[in-house]
Structures are given as C-alpha cells and as structure tokens.
Image (cartoon, rainbow, N blue to C red; front, side, top):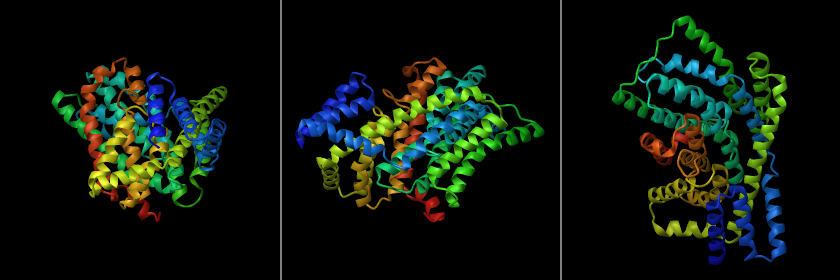
Length: 431
C-alpha cells in the first residue's frame, strides 16, 4: 500500500505543479497507481469503468439543469435588480455599498449556484461603483470574492449535489435546507468585518432611497428571488424531487429572462446552451476522474487507514474535527471543490460518523471549509476572477482578505462544533 500511495500522491502533485488540468492530473495519477497494483490492461479498463459508473447517476442530472438556470439568470439582468434591492435594505448604513455588495452576492450566488458567476456579475458592477465612491479597490474585491462563495451553501447548490453522490446518497433536499443558516452566518460575519472597516476608514453612507422608488425596486427583484422559493418550497412540499426541481428552475429562468425581463434574446439561447454543455462536460469529467481515484483509495484501504490513525492519535472529538478541517483547508488551496469533495468525502465521512457527526452536518462543514479555498491562492478560482475584474494583484489582496478569512474560519468553527446550525432546519422540516 505504501508504494501505491506514494505513486498516487507524487504523480498527482507533479502533474499539478506542471499546470496540467486537475481532471487530467487525477485520471493520470490514478492510472499510474493502478499499474502498480493491477495488471496494465485491467488498470485502464477499471479506470474507464469507474469513470462511467461515477457519472451514471440520476442525481447528477440536476447539475446541467442548475448550470443552465444559473447562466440564464446571469444574462437576464438579475444582478442589477438584486443590487438595487440590496441598496434599499442596507445601503443607508455607513459603508453601505460594502453591505450591498455582500447581500447582492449572497442573493445572486444562491440563485445562480455559482461563486464565479456571482463574482463576475456582482463584482463587474459593484467594484467600479465602490471605487468611484472612495472605497479601497482591494477591499472591494476581497468583499466580492468572499461573499460570492455563500451561494455554494445557500441552495440550490451543485456542490451539495456532488456531496450527496460522494456520501452514498445523503438527501439532497436535506442538504439544501441545511445550507441556509451556515450560509447566512458567513454573510453576517463578512458584514461584521465590513462594518468595522467602514468605521476605521470612514467610508461614506449611501443615499436614502425614496419610499416609492424603494417599493418599485423591491417589487422588481421579487420575481428573481422567487426562484429560490419555488425550488426549495417545491422540494419541501414534496411536489418534486431535487432533480425535477432543477428542470423547473430552467423553465422559470427562461420565462423570467426571455419573456418577463426581456434581457436575453432568443438568438442568444444557442450560445448559452453551448456554454452550459462546456461547463457540464468539465464538471462531469472531474466527477468521473475523481470517482476513479476514490475507488483506488478504497481498494488500497486508505480511508480505513486514515480513520484508524486519526482515532488512535487522540480520543478528543474536538481535536479530530479540528485536524480534518485543517487538512481540508490545505486541500482547498490547491484543489478545486468538486474533486476535493469526491475524493475526501469517502476518507473523512466514516471518521465523522464514527464520532457521532451526522452526514448532513459533515457535508455542510466540508463545503463551507472548501469555500475558503476558492478565495485563497494558488488555485483560488474565485480569487483570480475577482482580481481580473478589478485589475489588481493577488499580493495586494492579501491584507484586506485576512480579516475576511478570519470571519469565515470563525463561521466554520461554529458550524463544526454547533451541529444545530446545520441540522435545525432539516429536522424542523422532517428530514
């Protein structure tokens, strides 16, 4: 086993360091590992079989639908309407534009299910506006980048669907409901940092919106927010499953973007569909390759070995959960969220269950943990998008990001050690 683990880790790290795409790195390192444990012919066949098995799941059908729904929403003028509504709610406070940015990112991230989309859509508008009002450019970018990740916790979330697959069938509906309170907690933590920064740097107060204008902006944004109500409400009420809800989300997004807001033209639909196919192909390749790697890890009894090692290391549940979080934080700095969930769920979930942690609770903790990795170098995809929008460097981003990292880590610890934050809503709705 020691040789196979060495080959797996060494080849994977080398490939990543050579900037080989992560899906290819996972697949090649898995094949190389199997060559040392299985005959060459069966090794390649086994990888192919496991990749096919990994994506042959009805649950995964929700992912392309939610991706398409998010792209329609992203093109459909949703971001501007959510920003206008956020200005009405929190724009009048000192440093109000920072709160507007965070709240808009939370709303848009939840609707689109994509942190990158939220960073692009909200950041593309809010960062220049905040710059013009005298806010620090790097602070504006840091706020956008971190707040955008909350949409991966607040449903609908493709990552939670992937976790359901990796965990062996944890209820997607329960995971969706469980993500609300932790996602809001992260948003409130970021707002706390923004409030302190606004006082220290004396950022301006936003203009008060007249009552009639406020009502108009709120009413204009309600159709966008109804997507969340329709999807989650339908799932809770038992009207449709999470997979069926994704198709409903596409239909509603199409009606809203094309017929109601009229921001998306019919001639743009083929381009949106093509981008959806491209994104879906990338995600499915990641899932297939990660499933093959998870199989070889299980074949070599690596999850059981790690579980035994952690349990023998200490009897303290607090310490073991802290170690798991530290490992995942390190993993998140160099690995994309989807393969990280697929590879490390089979490793750490059995440990968590043995220590009495509910699989739903563990899933929310893991996703929140890996959200932090999206904002950290060297592989933080959301961080790179934010820097590209604001035309700043990662080096300049470090200082304003540090207090926001602290807020997210505090939220992570609270979610880890207070199970009710993740389990209260699922239990309340009978999951």
